Image (cartoon, rainbow, N blue to C red; front, side):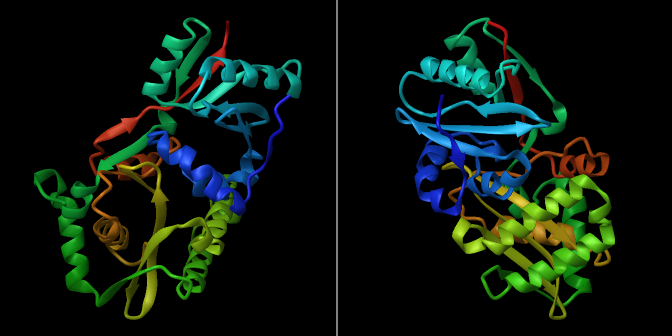
Length: 298
């Protein structure tokens, strides 16, 4: 049986080389996401034979990520399969977060061993950073209008988040939750815990973020971290909806402050929420990154 252990902040330097060198672009492989959401998925990890392994629970069912690293991948997958049986004899062996290139890899490596199914609600939205930073072209005219109106209406300032701004971000997050009844909804309440985890350990996680101020009062903030060498993950974006255009402006400003080395911005899933899907599609994603579950049938 593989010896897994809980994920901690002290593990960041160990895990980052595996994660960044994998060239995966899905939001699930960001260290900050793994850490901030570990409370919900009971996330644990192990290092075995130059591979990094993750195990977690989704709706009470054990699942794994495709191993990160180099070596005999087929043998490592079989080890995970044996671990799933050790966890519970009736447990099915599943690999989650399988993107199209990993799906092809699995099919080539272990043909007809997995049943692979995707769920549109969990597709990641990938945008070209330059699109969101410039908003050029006819399709972005409505977004430019929001940004220009915001500039004309408000006296505003964009500031990069540092330890001095964390208390104000936490205060705004609490107010946002009061307005949106986070405590009455499991989804938003879980998200709130993840956001608080991120803000509380902002510097230790290596997060980058920005906050928007109007007349000296914080009205929006956002943060994230690199996922791979060419993809930056935007994990959180909160804005005061009473301030017209605040969401559009924080989106635009942050895209302009993400280093130019990153080609893509991953703005994560819509979880099937109609309003969120409409908002994400309105920014014209470059790619909807499909994510699947591979279930052993071999």
